Amino acid sequence: MTTFNSDTEAIRAFNEKYRLLQHEIAKVIVGQEEVIKSILITIFSRGHVLLIGVPGLAKTLIITTISKALGLSNNRIQFTPDLMPSDIIGTEILDENRKFKFVHGPVFANIVLADEINRTPPKTQSALLEAMQERHVSMSGVTYKLPEPFFVLATQNPIEQEGTYPLPEAQLDRFMFNIYLDYPSTEEEINIVKSTINGDVATPSQIISVDEILYFQKLLQKIPVADNVYRYAVNLSTITRPHTEKAHPWANQYLSWGAGPRCSQNLVIAAKCHAVLSGKLSPDIEDIKAVAVAVMRHRIVKNYRAEAENIDIVSIIDNFVADNK
Image 1 (cartoon, one colour):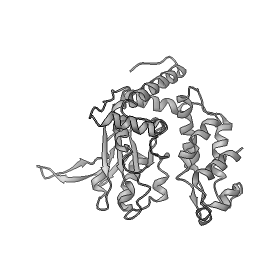
Image 2: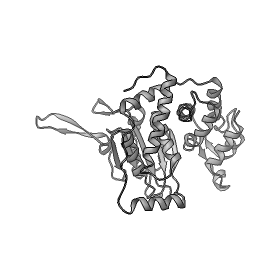
Image 3: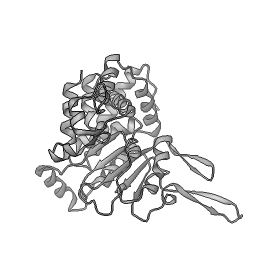
Image 4: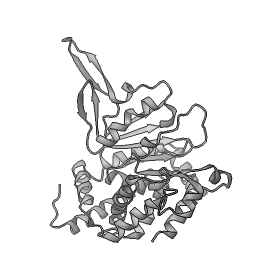
């Protein structure tokens, strides 16, 4: 791996790698630039993503393409009502010597696609909790470390609600970003059809090594953050908490639950990466604003009044951002 004379030089190299990644991924994925940018921000920030989108929008293709461009292993887990925790983390079997041997489950990969995560009961959903937070799993009192880097991209279908199990707040809070995957534009869909009906799907090349990813993850942790940026992020989380001293009027009117401290942490962490990918050496308030919706969307809960008045979460967050000082 190339060594750098300074963090500034390393940040410029990271920015260049990001541009190359964008170019390589675009060979396979048409459009969805913001979604791809958000996923890459999360990977380099050591977070996880909850992706909301209807079937057929290439969620699996996006994650396999990104994993190839990053040179990372990936596994897909199809969540179903009969899925058991051992189907995710692994199980113990008796080997030929009559000794128990742990067989790794599909969670042992750099990138794990948890497809339709809300189709499995909470007991199985919780099997991912330890992995996402601690980056290891436990079996019979033994701890097994997961490979680094480790990233979970979970998907949900926003349409079908029958036979689903809502994710508990504790699990939702483990996701750095909640991203909505929208339909492509007409021109993008035309390009998708043109590039796929002949079976000539491009294969992305590896742009970055695992060692470089780990290096850039540690680099982002060292990025300095000004006190006013910390204060802005914390205030943005604080004003979402209804019926507290600093609550925003919209929080009191339209929310039953506000964002916790992990929201403030993720706002700053994501803003660091967003700043670097924008060519800056440290984040400012505009970087916090840029990641606010993705970080906060799944951390605040609307009340019945908001539902009755048809006020969506994004509008509420936009009001918080506009009024936050």
